[in-house]
Image 1 (tube, rainbow, N blue to C red):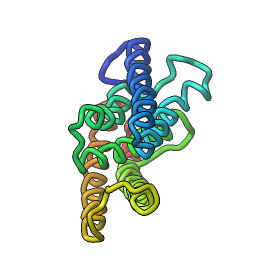
Image 2: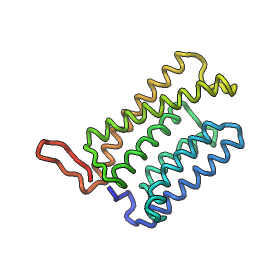
Image 3: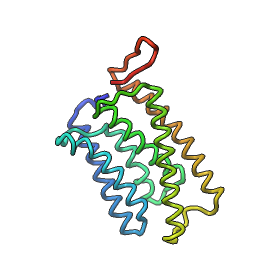
Image 4: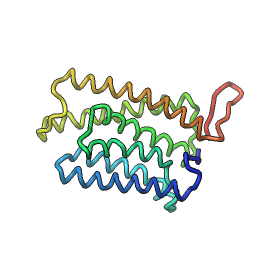
Length: 193
């Protein structure tokens, strides 16, 4: 799945680097404005996006720009004060998508379509659970106000599960469209390579 929406590798890398630069700016801006959780999250997304370039020691070895842009989008939304609860879980799902794509493209790991969808859904739920715990303790110890009450927290997890399922479906459709090496094995499993 080394293809992307754009066909030029340098253009893809430049667009991915632009999204990473924005994420790094959002990291600093979040810490300066007193939102350390968002700052930490933006830093993690930027670090995950940079792993292929660092490991391969090549500035053009970057994840597809549309995925890095999708991961950066919630930081843009939050920076302009347009943050909604769903945007936070889109950020979590985008991070799960980014991790899954990097594992499939830049490692020896091969994912079937069904496993890829399940991986994205489970990763989204796991990250969302960790993010919920972090926000809960932030409310408790840092005086933030992420949750009004326990049902509010539970609805956050339901929203995360829904966004995770949608992200899993998007992931599968993305692989089908941009992975020329997708094949169907004898036992009917679709593999991406």
